[in-house]
Length: 74
Image 1 (cartoon, helix red, strand yellow):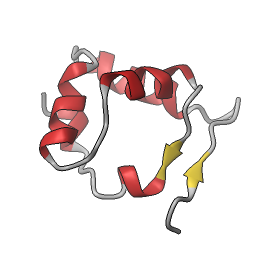
Image 2 (tube, one colour):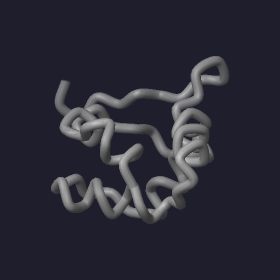
Image 3 (cartoon, helix red, strand yellow):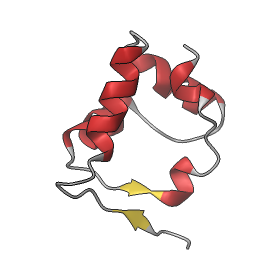
C-alpha cells in the first residue's frame, strides 16, 4: 500500500467533498493545512488547492494518520 493513490473520478470527487466539509465549517484552506502539519503530515495549501480542483491525487499514506478533527475542529 506504500505510495498507493486514490484517484478522483467524476462520480466520486474527493476535492469537492473536502470543499463541502470545509465550507460547512466556515474555515479557509490554511486552517486544515496548519492542523495537518502540526500532526506531522507534509501538506501545503497549494497541495490542498490542487486536491480540491481534482488535479492532484491523494496518497493513502498522507491521509491515513489524519483524524477527522484536522479538518472539522478549526
